[in-house]
Length: 242
Ligand SMILES: Cc1cc2nc3c(=O)[nH]c(=O)nc-3n(C[C@H](O)[C@H](O)[C@H](O)COP(=O)(O)O)c2cc1C
Image (cartoon, rainbow, N blue to C red; front, side, top):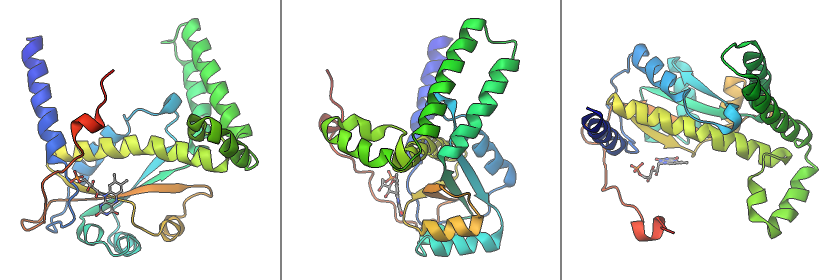
């Protein structure tokens, strides 16, 4: 039983993963609100650093707002022909807010043993220190110099740049989960980073310090959408076995 389930899951995953392509020409058919809500519900289950979920997913359901954002996506056909758009917004401040909510949840839930509570408190305190104290711009040049010697330091959620990169990096897991969930429903997508972030941030009234790593176009592929072979670097070069 377990083996056949595993095989079926694998076949489904492979089909879904291969169904997902960057589609740039949609056929104009609308996606039901239920389907969008369902794929958003899967996206929120994406993993994030310390479970801090430092992002929001803006579902652009209003036609006028969608048209304005499509224009801000440099008029890309994927955006213009999409049935709907999802703007992925990331902000370290969202992470700090989650930390407060998560602490309250851990404290009030009977499901956590004392040892688990202590673990979560320690982790949340560490993230809060990093995101609060580390947010000062002075850290940015310091980390930048230190990263010359230790490159991995450039990934720390510290400084006004590092914390935004951290938030954006976390948001991208939700974006990919959303696109795979869409593919599983036969809905196509195109991730886009070609847009005017400032125009979109103003239109959506995003809080100060918010960055937009991606706008995702969703829709159903048009029959004459150009889809080339899915070229990738050789696996020998991409996957290194040790
Ligand atoms: C971060 C990111 C930004 C992208 N930006 C754009 C974009 O602005 N416009 C576009 O047409 N495709 C964009 N793409 C899609 C890529 O071109 C596409 O994923 C890649 O060519 C591989 O093709 P596939 O997704 O069909 O496998 C982007 C993809 C990613 C991950």
